[in-house]
Each structure stands twice: as structure tokens, then as C-alpha cells.
Length: 266
Picture 1 (cartoon, rainbow, N blue to C red):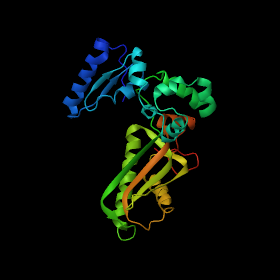
Picture 2: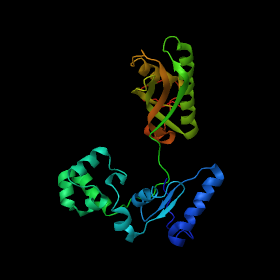
Picture 3: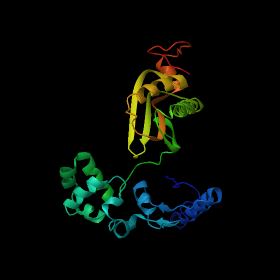
Picture 4: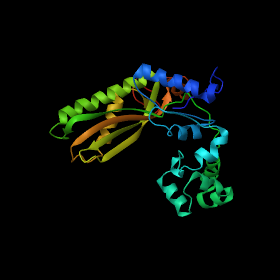
């Protein structure tokens, strides 16, 4: 997680180290868990700094520390440089963030695309203006369970049915409690060989009704070959709107009965 304490009283004492120690202590006193903290001018560098002194360490990186603390790191330490991008960078002889910083912006754009190449240039020089966002709307809600033993779709049909219905009820309750409706219903299965299958479908209504979710999820389930035992079963509702936004989409009219193509179920 990220915390912006630029304007917090005392937040700059010892370069932020004092407040970081207080955060560590508070987390440990509340949960019994240790954590590592990176303090830096932006999210990009703070994320890398949080890896420096694990476990339970504090690392402070100032603006002037870029060349000594960041440039010697491998490019994979940049949050956003994955295995494929790193392999391509290495093909060009770019091993470290310092190597990356030596390449001109135009060269990076020509070899990695306009958006990603420009981003590589910025992060190599430690630039990141993303704000710390403390609130966001969820894109989906889901419930899943891993079974104590692998279940067979036919021989354990009754038990699977109970679990499936319970997951739908719990997702519906989550939606109601948090004030959301959704119209894309999906399932997730993990088999005894650890392979995963997912299916989803978008229905004509925004809903938080367990029966509607159960019906749509059941149709998704029928599209999966159930010839192996199951280790995990999950139900997901996506394409969410708040109840208020759903009402506005209907110009303030909420149907009270039936399931029409424009109905919102509350």
C-alpha cells in the first residue's frame, strides 16, 4: 500500500524515518505482523525502496540518491517491467536501470512504442507523478472456496450445489451491503490438476439478487467440461454500478416486479 505523508505534521523528521517507525509499530501492535517500508519522493521509488531491507526494514531514498541506489538495480525491479520487456531490454544490452537511463527517449520510443518507450525513459530517471489514491470503485465482487477434499461433479453433486448456492448468496449479500449492482456473472473452477477454468456472461439486467446470480452462474457452469474433480469453486459479479448510478440510468424509475431488459433488481 502507499501512504502520502507529505503534509503530515512531523512526516519529514529524519527524512520520514520517524513516521515510518511509528507505522511499523502500529501495524505490529495491531496485527502482530512486521512490514518493510520504503520512503521516497514518489510511488515508483518508494515501491523499490520497500524491497531494500526486508524483513521489517526501513529504507529512505532522496532525490539525490537516484544514481547510487536506483540505477544499479536490474530493470525487473521497476514495477511495470515484466519478463518479456526485460528480455527485450537485455537483447539490447540493457541490464540495469542505469543502462536504461543512458538510452535516449527517441530510441526507447522507436524500439518499445510511443507510450511504453516514453514511460521507460521517465521511470529510468525516477519520475512518477501518480498521486496516492485512497478510494476507488470496485470493478467486481467475488466469493470462492477451496474444498477440504476434491469433489466430483456427479458423485458430489448435492454438496457442490449447496456450496454453489451459498457462494451466490454471499456475493449477493456483499453487493447489497456495499450498495452495488452488476450485470456480468462469472464462475471460476480449479481442478485437481490445478488447471483453472473461467466462464462469464452478461445479462440484460443489473442485479444484486441471489437467485438471478445463481441462475446465470449455473448457465456458465454448464459450459465447462466437468470431467475432473474440483478443488475450488468461485462466483463473481462484475460490470458494477452503484445503486444510485443504476437508478439514474433508469431516470429514477426502479421496477418493482419482473425481470425486464431494463430492470434493476434491488
